[in-house]
Image 1 (cartoon, rainbow, N blue to C red):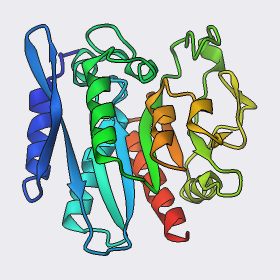
Image 2 (image 1 turned 90 degrees about the horizontal axis):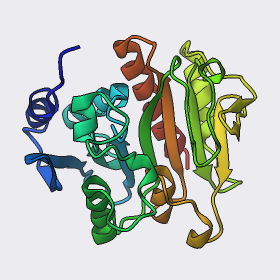
Image 3 (image 1 turned 90 degrees about the vertical axis):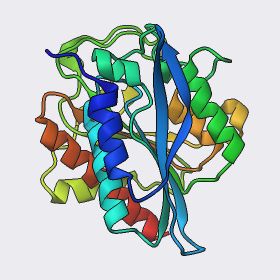
Length: 273
């Protein structure tokens, strides 16, 4: 497999997509003398009642379906702005993982287990600082992920190893939200209507799966939340946090399409609120 290039395969397309809107630099991560700019795009509506949405992908660099879905969503939203939402979009927050086709960054750190630490990895510090400085409240956040059907999964939040044969093979999602304000069911129903297979296994790794949704109630206080993942850390800035999971065994086109279908369904659910 040819080594990926963050500059050629992501920064150039990102610059091209964002040529009509400001491309913002959060900061630069350095690895082995090479610089990696972590960039994002802000798409703002003129509607004063527009809801804010945080979109991220690529925290695990080899999970490229979400990365390309974020780029495609960005391109679509620039051409056809949504008056009801403001978007902050980070298409890839693990550049070296993208280049190396790894879950971890080049320091062999899983960035999605790094958010509870103070100053561990540059990529984590950059995102945390930006969130702190801008201090927005988001209607919801979505972090796009993918699941490998064939690889065993080890040490999920201290839960031990799970053999590959127990891995999910169909779409599922994680949701953190208040008990009376869950939106995931509407997303799953929308995806099913469009022919997306949904995971029905009773447990996904160590957690209960309810018809394609691994739901956790929003903690009553920030101190009760698990902030080690980006998904958990974002609870500081929203009442509704989501992870979407497509399968790496699907074609890349299908993975991107399903990620976008899930995002569109979520936006539809929040339009109803």
